[in-house]
Figure 1 (tube, one colour):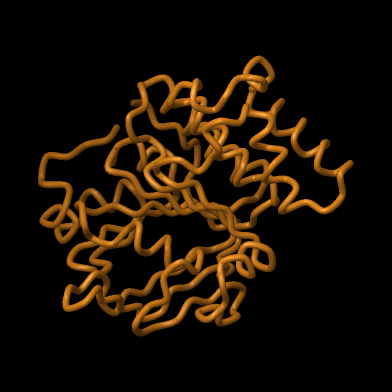
Figure 2: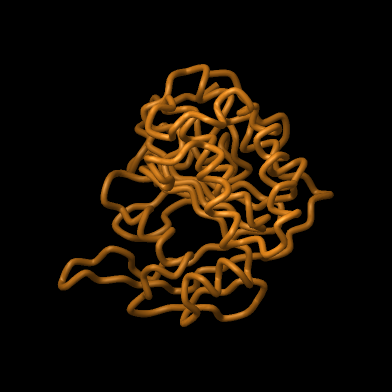
Length: 258
């Protein structure tokens, strides 16, 4: 897969913190999921999360959106502690969009009916609702699909729909949970371009996790490798794959993505 990202973090880009997880620990019964985990997301940045199954990537997303409260540690957005704030409050006040790995849409509604249903929750003005829906349908080239039930869409079309649903509220932070899973090569390439365009044209800060390491590294500025519930390495893609700790925990010594 060719590199989609035409640039990485540059000196002119602002390193202004938008989201921070600080010393997060999560236990399910006696099982440790995350232990003293800390990282941050800067404004206008695309950050990737990598690690083996069960390492806590989806748990991190659930903590950020407020579905799970950590046993220890804090979540900050725009320097404000939001650890105790509920899901709807974070979504509305801090503009968080979430694209789950599975589902995220109404199966028996058409593509446009899905957009209308969610827009009624997140956009008060009906005129603005219609404008936003039409803009997203056009942006994601969904005109020919708007009257098709969501259940009858292809995997890539469903993914574009769910991203549109997440974008209805004009989020500042977008979380993508395994966006490349079970997609064909061309669909992945198109989705990578969409992700980069959301950063460059909409100034959305993005966190994505995926087991498709090459596909993820091709469209992020920075990536994190997780192991045993901790961050063991964080760097640009080219540097990360050379990191000894990242190689031992995840990549191996022969991994290449160019």
